[in-house]
Image 1 (cartoon, rainbow, N blue to C red):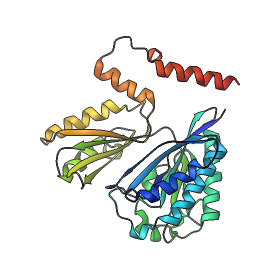
Image 2 (cartoon, helix red, strand yellow):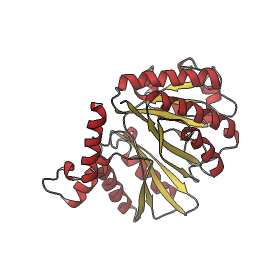
Image 3 (tube, helix red, strand yellow):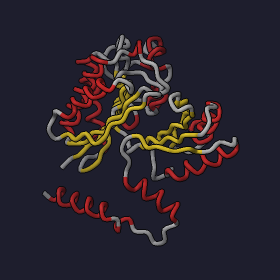
Image 4 (cartoon, rainbow, N blue to C red):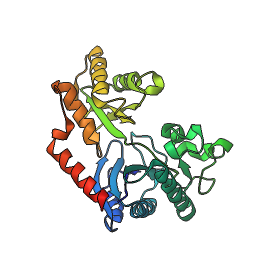
Amino acid sequence: MKIVESVPNFSEGRRKEIIEAIVQEARTLDKVWVLDYSSDPDHNRSVVTIAGEPKAVTDALFNMSKKAVELIDLRKHRGEHPRMGAVDVIPLVPIMGISKEECVELSKELGKRIGEELKIPVYLYESSATSRERENLSEIRKGEFEGFHEKIKLPEWKPDFGPDKVHPTAGVVAVGCREFLIAFNVNLGTDNIEVARKIAKAVRHISGGFRYVKALGFKLEERGIVQVSMNLTNYKKTPIYRVFEVIKLEAERYGVPIVGSEIVGMVPLNALLNVADFYLRLEDHNPNLIIEKKLLDTIAKEVDGE
């Protein structure tokens, strides 16, 4: 059996009825499972996690994108998180029985369909990227929806699929195959946004921090605090605990406490086991002794053998 995961991000985190309508498009298809979805009103963004057989997942992603185009108007959208599209990014992640190369082909097929049928400019990113400049999602997203109307006119930013002009309400979208990504946020006990921005700068790769960390500082207006919002693009090489410890040290420099942290969307079990191993100082720890992991591994082997 081949299983692929996708975590599409939609530029709506405040109107529950719109989120539900988008998610419902995935629920109606066989061989697709909606594993999780969450919304953030400050970011004005929703993250949905689905998994299933490749063809079913790409059909679900197209239908969800179509519904997002119908219901989201970026001309009226405001939020803390950078965005360039109603459906902002669609990653495809190989989970079981499927290779990275197959996921790259799936991303191209889906991107072509979105471009041709929904008339949205599509950029392939990460492992699917057609140039080095397009591997990094943040490079594609620079300028956001408002700036893309001029950016798209540049020869180097000609879309991979779809029209050469920004969709008037839905913007543009990035589609691509990537490794498992963890969206990890740390909340700070202050309303000083500059503290969050300085700490984000200290941990993100582009400004000298960890190789597999992307980070920004945001305000959480409803709570009166600020947040270091991160994407950890390789938790095996840059584990969660290592990033958390540096953020804690940096926060102490400014006399600011950490009031909480959160993981947005799904997370691999091994990523959390690494955290437990680090903080509990477990000796001779064997992950196979965790009953849920052992059961899942056994089930996966049986399914693979059919």
